[in-house]
Each structure stands twice: as structure tokens, then as C-alpha cells.
Length: 194
Image (tube, rainbow, N blue to C red; front, side):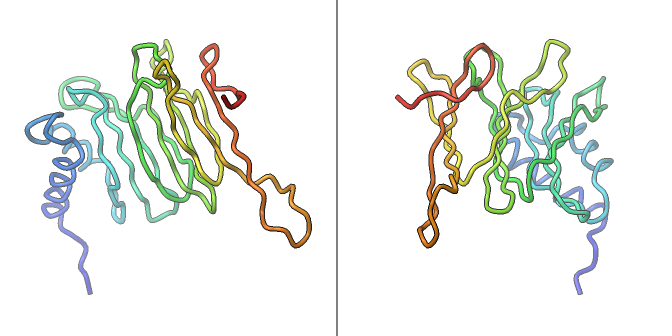
């Protein structure tokens, strides 16, 4: 029998996770206000999958939580005063969380958040950006059997998504096709392969 961890053990575990997730470049030790955020956010049975500071001051924090109720949640918290965070956005895209990267995908000088998830036999991609009102919005969302992130000659990210076509005849193996999505006028659109 494995007893539920005490609040002290849970806080120590969160500190270890933060040291690994925030890394040496983000801060020398976990920000006390981020630790307090997790202590007040986690519920019994929640499992922290990822904690990531989205900026060097940890004013914006991404947290992925596996909840006992089912699908994992990606939560974005924004600092609202010294030591206080507020939930700014929540995302649930798949059955399991795979990855999160912070990078300038469109070359506008501002970072976007690229998340990948798995759901059934599909890989799900979601690119989130901050609007002029500072709200999170998805600028690209798609799914396929395989999602590849590649870079064009200008350094912008493009997505190559391979999906089943269902064009095969009876008794033939599944047929797959790859579609390329490139940035055009601030949106990802289907584009011809070069």
C-alpha cells in the first residue's frame, strides 16, 4: 500500500520538478511564488507532468497536470502582483501530453507556444499566440498520423502533416499523404510542397 504523500513531501516533489523544468537558465532556485501557485493549484490525485516558465522572470508559467478525471490539462498562469498568480487560459487537446516549446514560429519577434498531444492514433499540434488583448488564441491546430515541424529558408516554422487518405481499395494497405502548412498573412494555410 502506497500512502498519499503528505503536503511537505508533495511540496518537496514540486520543488524538484521545478528545478528540472525551469532549468538553470530560468532561475537559480524555484521561484517561491511558483511553488505557492502549485501548492494551491494541485488537488488530490493530480500529477504534474510539466512546469515551464514562459519568460525569464517566471511572470507567465505553463503547467501540465494529469488529473484523475481524465485528460491532461495545460494551464497558463499569469503573475498578478507580488507572489500572486491567476489562471489565464486552459487547454485540453488530446489523451496525453507530448511536448511544449516556446519559439517565434512566424518571425514577428514574439514567441508563440507550440504544443503537441496524442489522441488515439493521431498526433495533435496546436500553436498558441498572444493577441493584442494579451489573451491566448490558437493560430494553427491540426492532427495527423505524424506531425513534423520544419523550417523554411526565412527561418519560419512550417508543419508537415501525414494523414491517411482512405483512397486505398479493398485488401490494399492504408494510403497516406503529407500536407504542408505554411504561414501566410498571419495564418497557416495548406501550401504546395517545394
